[in-house]
Image (cartoon, rainbow, N blue to C red; front, side, top):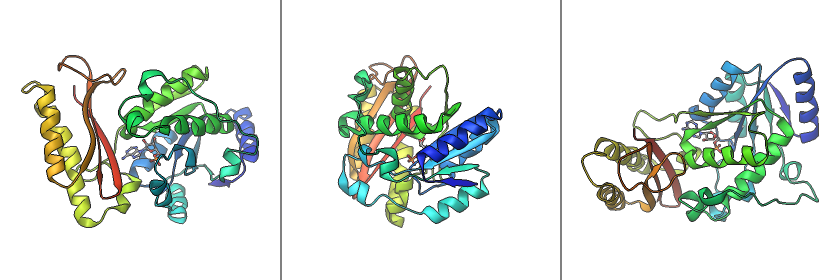
Length: 280
Ligand code: AMP
């Protein structure tokens, strides 16, 4: 695996590789890698000749300074895991490589998708995500971009970003299913900040999503959402939302008709977790 810290050097390298007929598949991450991230690397390797991973904890997407401060960093372990997974290129930039002096933050017109769920609870978060992904795509120029369904709304935002940047016909967006622990808990870098008993409690998120799925046709949606929220709160969670929404625009569903997804965001202590489950 080749490691790059400078954007310009990486761009030149990828340009050369593309001239030699290689197609880069790109997996952007914030590090503290787990098997979920590595499943994206595996998927990238299956469909591309050059697998590029970036590790960059993007300060502009953190609306909570504490979350940024305590975001886990395990860079040496990450490098080893990427090497063992057959990743070809790791981009490990500093903040000034991504946002050099004179960088002007654009505003991305994401429409209503930015105003709901994560957008409502994390103001500015998706603008920050678009800033970093816009820069990374400029640098890496991938043929394929691989994202995890774990961040369902983020996938929709980045799909919108690709069309805003007129890159949707050059870059294939692939959404990879969420990898879970045996307990059902969605793998997440933030799980490392949970103690053992919190990890046990955290399994309730997926259990509640599964209960919603099982009972979708049996109970009113409002009842399903409220029951899940109450059980989560009884078990120590501070709940931001439990929502049942249409997959195409994340509009809250009023009936069980159509393609729906259940989404949850809730905190245990100062660790905020999200998860989602396609319902039908
Ligand atoms: P992050 O490092 O959290 O920014 O995540 C980097 C990429 O990995 C994003 O596209 C995430 O959606 C994806 N990802 C995170 N957790 C998982 C998981 N459990 N399964 C599959 N993909 C994941």
